[in-house]
Amino acid sequence: MAPRHVLRCCQRSLSWIPVIFINLVVGWSYYAYVVELCILTIPNNAEKISYLVVFHLFFIMFIWSYWKTICSRPANPSKEFCLPNVEKEQYEKEEHPDTQQEILKKVVVGLPVYTRTGTGAVRYCDRCLVIKPDRCHHCSTCDMCVLKMDHHCPWVNNCVGFSNYKFFVLFLAYSMLYCAFIAATVLQYFIKFWTNQLPDTHAKFHVLFLFFVAAMFFISILSLFSYHLWLVGKNRTTIEAFRAPVFRNGPDKNGFSLGFITYPSILTPTTMDKCQVTALVWTYFLLPFLHPPNSIPGMMDTTWTVMDATSYISRLSPYQAHTL
Image (cartoon, rainbow, N blue to C red; front, side, top):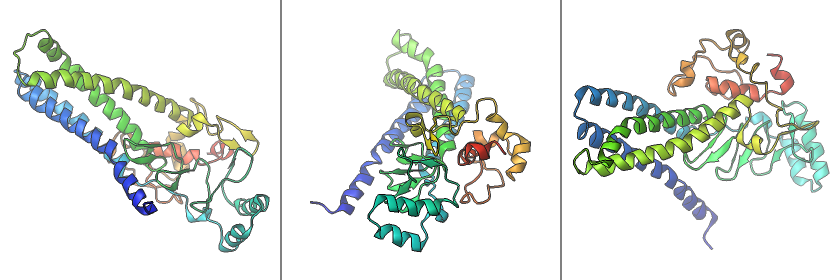
């Protein structure tokens, strides 16, 4: 039987296959659109230049947000959620679950933790040896606890959570716009090739296939993007959508929701002042490479963005959030 670290290495290598596949498809789409369509097929220079300018705008934003999602390391619980040395030794020596829970309950008193397990116990990770903060979950693929974990996405080979949820939503948005623009601008030449109004050249295969691929990806991404917009509106993660978070008084699927009307008001200048955040504008959200100058104190130096604002509020209890 192969050693565990060898199997782990093989697993990590294989996990890059979906990322490689996506990059190959995107690379081919770039060649097919720029070379086969714009350079070799479109005769009008004004049309050609306008298509290329808009195409590269969507392409750059799509690739940037995609790789930001991939390269952003998942945020982990801070040291304050680790057991103190004395309690840790007591917990490891104790064999009875009830007594272990008593130890955890004493420690969790001073922590901002409001969620529990389905049985009402304190959520503790035996692999990472930390008390799980609200909305934190252990990812078996990454083998770590991830703050505000939404899901593990094989297409980015990373956990989507507190540190990169903004980039993931931008990746969905710009990839959808990228596919929509390609499908819309290729359509007329797709029809001309299909009806033999254009001569049979090697560009025909690329143009025909490019339209089908762009339309197929647009439809699939549109459904996923719409779903995540709904989750953002509800201030809910994918995990919470399938399994309601359990609080001290029981499960509540809307436990972190501030409502569609009150929720956007969190991002008003008055509220931002209370969070010691300045110069928050929508460009910080729409562009994956811009960040406001300030960061939230005590938030593990996580850069403050509009999407991180949802993550910050979601770490508070419903009662704390309403006091902002």
